[in-house]
Length: 163
Ligand code: B12
Image 1 (spheres, protein in one colour):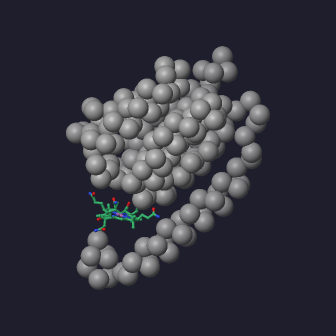
Image 2 (cartoon, protein in one colour):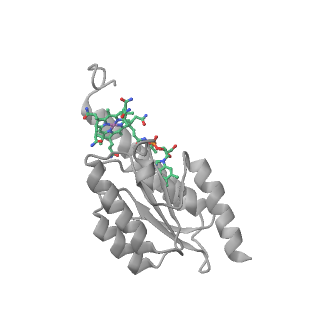
Image 3 (cartoon, protein in one colour):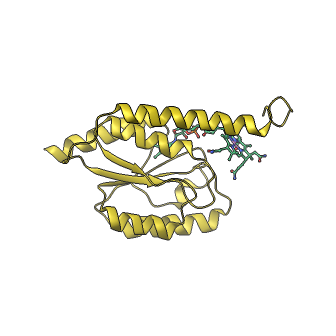
């Protein structure tokens, strides 16, 4: 908004994001490394999505509640997401969606990912682009409105795994 009204220049947004990313890394380094028994979670943002911060925050939040979480980054082609799920053998996958340019292609790719994960690996989704029109077309296990939602759910999932 500020950029549109000539109050801020583009570099100021970029720099703002750099500062935010640095802070997230700092916070991440303060969390003890996950235990060897910690469940594994991976996730990221899909192809065409330029937003870097949300998936980094999800990683941080999951690490805080004891998951061995790895963000794969943003603008990730769905085939690569599928490959990562194969390589990491995760107990949970998250997808953060802030921007969707081609809804039809996104829906097809996302459903392909859900299919490849099978029944045993929950797919949690969130992000500002997942509106009421898009969500019913997607296959997933749970949609979270906020990181708080996710943290509560993830803590519960971890507890259930221990039982
Ligand atoms: C930084 C930024 C950008 C940067 C991002 C760079 C980067 N390196 O990441 C860039 C330059 C790409 C960008 C571009 C644009 N942007 Co922009 N951007 C922002 C800004 C300032 C911050 C976004 C951000 O990272 N927020 C922090 C994240 C963590 O918060 P969040 O997205 O709200 O996510 C929360 C939840 O959704 C949830 N969540 C997210 N993911 C997940 C995943 C899971 C699993 C779970 C559980 C939860 C979850 O948790 C998060 C924390 O609460 C916002 C304004 C804002 N205040 O948010 C505008 C904003 C999103 N942008 C906007 C616009 C208009 C644009 C452009 C169209 C501008 C233009 N004319 O070119 C383009 C579109 C680009 C595209 N292809 O979509 C508008 C969107 C308006 C709308 N209603 O759609 C906003 C809201 C600004 C505004 N008020 O006008 N942008």
